Amino acid sequence: MGLFHFRRRAEVENKQSESMFGEALLKAMIEGTEMNAKCAMNIPKVAKSVHLICDIVSMLPIKLYKKSFVEDKKKVSRVHDDIRTKLLNDETGDTLDSVQWKRAMVEDYLLQGNAYSYIYKMGNHFKSLHYVEESFVSVLPNIDPIFKDYDILVNGIRYKPYEFLKVLRSTKNGADGKGIVEENNELLKIAYATLKYEYMLVKTGGNKKGFIKSAKKLTDVAMTALRNAWNRMYGGNSTENVVILNDGLDFQEASQTSVEMQMNEKKKTLDEQILDLFHITPNDFEKTIKEAIMPILSVFECALNRDFLLEKEKKSFYFAFDLKNIMKGDIKNRFEAYSIAIKDGWLTRNEVRYAEDREEIDGLDVISFGLADVIYDVKTKQYFTPNTKQLNDLQNGKQEEINTESEVLEDEGK
Image (tube, rainbow, N blue to C red):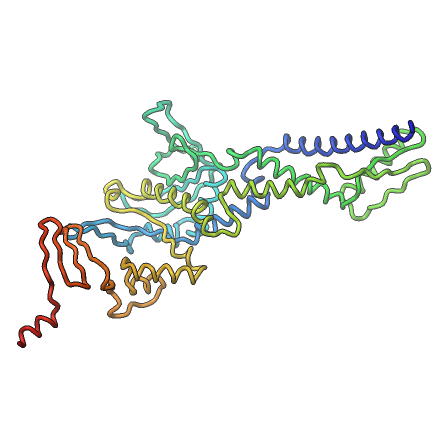
């Protein structure tokens, strides 16, 4: 009975020591990891999330609009012949085209919290837009907490803030921000350490861990030879995957540690947490667009309106992303949305055709209303009921019956 308890106790102690070894190894990997954007992009779920958001934003064109008043009516018109729309959607004037530029800016924004592009101008004329890697940019703020100001330093050259387009995440000074890597450093360290731990297991060729028992004490020469053979085997050398044990040596396989047994479960949890960082909801594209994409577009538009417009233009001009391309992947929902817009009267059929890159057709620039609808003019305070042909004045309390052209002709004939 005593011998049984002794063996059982020894097995438990072995399992505990193996578990502690695995956990200690993983902990050492976490503590020895310096997390940065490059390491973060080695984590598959992070890379997938960043690429998804970058792909969506990069395919959206940025358009310039002008607000104006024509005969006391608000009018919004698109500006087609401005060089800035070409820089943002076609050629930036740099080595990067517009798609690559947007991807680089969004990736820096997400991971580093700072995305910078130098605006090259001659006077008030915009010439080109040059992406600058975040690592080359230093911010030199002043010490005033109220009237904040700063300069931007690139390769030892000092620039003013208005010379750069700045897209910042989680900023409190308007000069630099915080990215996901800084805000969630520990979580990403765990994910990266888990990846390295798996890599270490794969590198050993899937060989079992264990212990070597010796019936007698080994000499230093024998210990060195055995250690070298074991290192060659577990070092991923495919030409030597066998270790010959001499008489008196015995290999005892170690049982799976708790770290290894929980690895898959931990990976699933980490993947879910990383998706939450980027506000990505699997199998719900609409929610992902709303929570992951729209906030970035809003920050981007605000930055463009601040840095990419002249001061005299800021009252009447603004930049905005065209979200039409997001809908193009779902033709059913897109056409249903068009149908509702035409029915409710805020889009004409020709405007829909233009949105779908089709030619206009004469006679389709009309908005139709049902006879049961009541048409109200907010300026004159009058509403017209087509079904009863009555015009009512809310201010004066007057009511007037409107005759159609056919009725007038009929009366004149009589």
